Image 1 (spheres, rainbow, N blue to C red):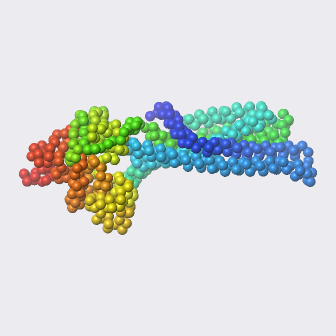
Image 2: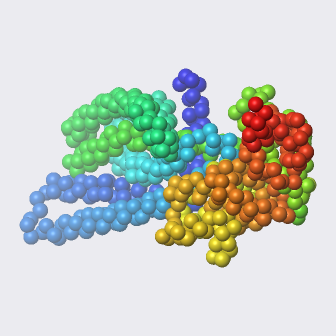
Image 3: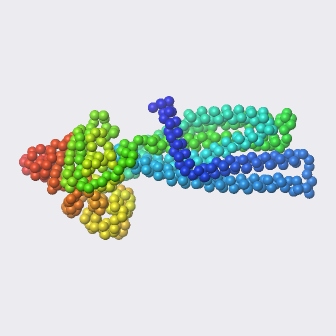
Length: 601
């Protein structure tokens, strides 16, 4: 994409970023006012009032000699003035720091919550298309971008504006001509600086994107470090990282060179401004009768102002980086949610637990327009029935359960629970009525107790232990030194696959939901553990609507009903006894898994 095409998008992103930053800043109006007021007061007092008093002293000294015994009598007002100016100026400096800390602490808190709420409420399609590490990095850069921008505005931009106003107001009575020339030169400087700033901004956004990609590559390698090591692919991952690192460095180099060129041009303008000022100072007394004290103020004020403008290069660079760092998260914040509750959506109320898929049509957002997983699929699961979903990989079994959980929305048809369309109900209320155990156990880097009680945090110790016992997990938990307080590691890496799965099953048992979804829930267990857990699951499924996805058909053979899916359509529906003698897909799958095909050879 060309720079011309990305420019409108970049400008829109800048506006939205500043919108979010202002949204969080105005939550602290007093701190915002104090930041502006103290920045102006600090600059006016320490940079301008100090010099103004010194100018008065120089004029008084130049007027006539002051006897030694009259120094304090003559200069005490000036000394007191300098003392007051510096004392108040320093107080303003500390209040300035206080207001900045208030804004940054408040801003980081609210921006972190904003990002968390946005990310946690996005669809699974959104999350499966992105690196988790990149999202964390983007959130961190979004917050640091706000902090950097507050620092730049309070410590650089506002003092620079205050310096311009003070210089013009204080020097205008003495030399309107000089102020007019200086104003024209400063306007030219601002125009040149802003024009170059506009050109550099897309480069900062590209740098931020390259750094985000680098974080994603690193996160992907670290998250899957076991696969990297067991496949001996450290060198390959290093190549991927080096490529991303080089891309980030190249983007940084291009941005840096552009900023250096801009700095060279603005420094030339500053040098010219100081040259013109020197001419006025040298000839001010002879040409216009300007006093020595006023000439000191003229040079000092202009020099201070030129130094402020000299730092505009670094100020713009920091603003560029702050906005560029926040750009990617800004786009995510404005990205529409693929699954979103309707305003005022009521909670789902489950009395029986009947599940209906009516005339279901669905395809994934990133799939081709005609690549549908389901086309007009209808399936009725009566309340309390235990249904197994079987079929070859890619037939749509797991997708059906995700639509029930509303992790994605259908394009056509309805998913109903007790006659209520799940798309019209609050998502959280829906998912709190469904105990879900996926193929890969989803554990947090927390204690086993917290993981088991995640769906029911108010559960008693006895209830947690009973759920662990029913899931055949208590035996290994009690052997651990810390028992239920054992930290499981990121994604539960400190536990074996079977142990992780039993903890997940214990969580489902404790949740005690009216609807149960098991997606290959026993696939990670050894034969002995599977047999024990299977008995616990049968007790758990009793009286509950249960949907069980399985490749291992022995898992579903005892269920009330088995539905066979193939290419998104229901091809068989019945009990194990009926389907195993029907000569269809299920019988073929059963024969292969039970070894009957060997007996016929």
